[in-house]
Image 1 (cartoon, rainbow, N blue to C red):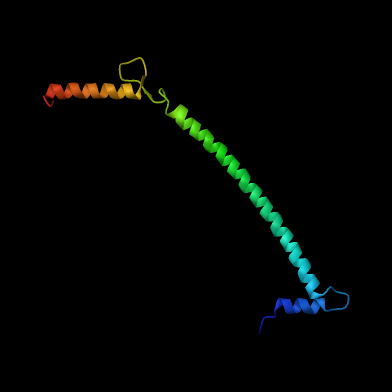
Image 2 (image 1 turned 120 degrees about the vertical axis):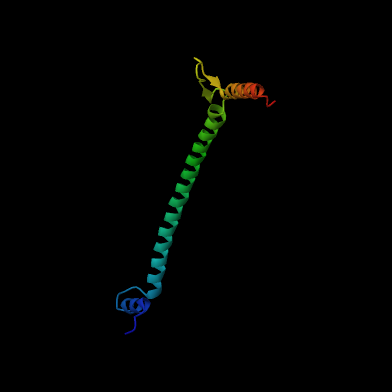
Length: 110
């Protein structure tokens, strides 16, 4: 059994008295398809533009946070054991290296 070509059947239906011609039907169908595709593409472009705008705003907010708040002078603080105050990361590293130097001097490694 062979499959019937849908276009052949459509031509037969359209050739009946009072029906539109095949070319008229085909043109109207293509016109509607183009309208639907064009509308879909317009909505897709709008959505992409909205997403780009939202992404740009989000990225700007993250950049501001990372450059001003996260990496600021008081962004990373540490409370050394036995101290009542928090110190910056730089000050904490200074203390660590001072203690390492004292240990090396004590052991005679310097």
